[in-house]
Image (cartoon, rainbow, N blue to C red; front, top):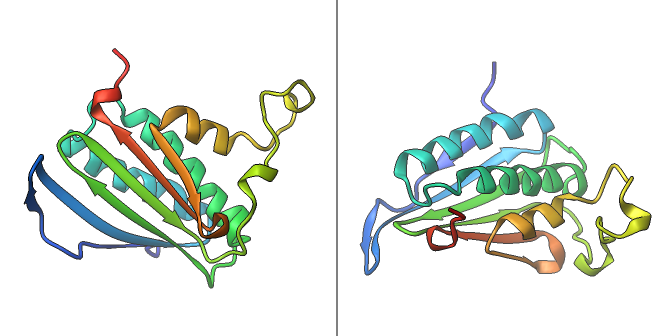
Length: 157
């Protein structure tokens, strides 16, 4: 079985005023089958480092949604295109940036999945889930980049 993703550590772990941080740059081919092994690998690292103990499930769901959106809607599952992921973790938070090679979208154009007319729709919940589960979510570069952050301080007890 071929590897569907690449992990590159551009800088060694370093001390930061609030404690040690790790920054990773990763990429995967725009194939739906690449998402789960990629998420499993990154989540293993996040759990092992205990950056945001108790919030790992929220991060995992939001990351899967962001990657699915990038692969399916951004890159249209073109295996010649890639999805790029930056992950920065430290003693109290995880930040993830997902970038696709697509045309982007207007985040205001996405219908509210909680509106009565959209409740039975089988699409359109990914962005809602990301915004609900993460402390911060913002779209940049016309929607081709999503930035997400989860803080340990915001953990639900």
